[in-house]
Amino acid sequence: MLNATIRHFTEDDIPLRAMLLRDPRFQANLTDFAVSIDDETLSADVRTTIAERQQEKRIFAMCTPRGDVMGFCWITSVDWRSQTCELSFGVFPRFRGGPGALAVQAAHDYLRAELNMRVIVNQVLEHNTMLQSAETLAASRQVRCAYDSYTVGEWRSACYWSLTEEDARAELEARQARHRELVERIRERGRRQGGNPDGTQDRDGSPPVAGGS
Image: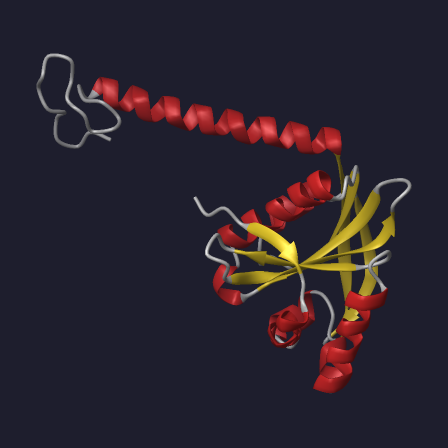
């Protein structure tokens, strides 16, 4: 399983982020402001964020264990006293789907562990199914806001939901339970077929039967 890592955004990341901001699907799914300004203005705005806006907005790079950048995430509407923020993210096309979803989960974990955020607000435009299905998005939302954003010539509705520490703990327990269930199914399958799940020999010295897990 791919384990994503989170690090602080640096000036060296600016060209990559500009590329992502100008991706057509990204523009429709989050914001299209990057196509209305030139490279110099965009770079200057990001440098200002890095140097002067850390209290109100922070940008992070989401990376593979080898350090390849999968995308970026950033927090806004930061209330340090109440320990709340809003999380936004963008993932490069080749990492969208499962790897991107793991990167976003790593971002949530990072914000809780490193910045001590207790409540994280998520906002995803309703048509955006890059990282999760429409059904999952509908099930997650706590608020649906019509005409929330205007991107690429259309008004878009948005789904909002918050994740508290208790929610995060419950999600972790659910993931661990699913993992344990999967492991047990694999073990049971191996027992039924007369072999061991890891492909080792049985206790009587005989090799596992063909087709064992």
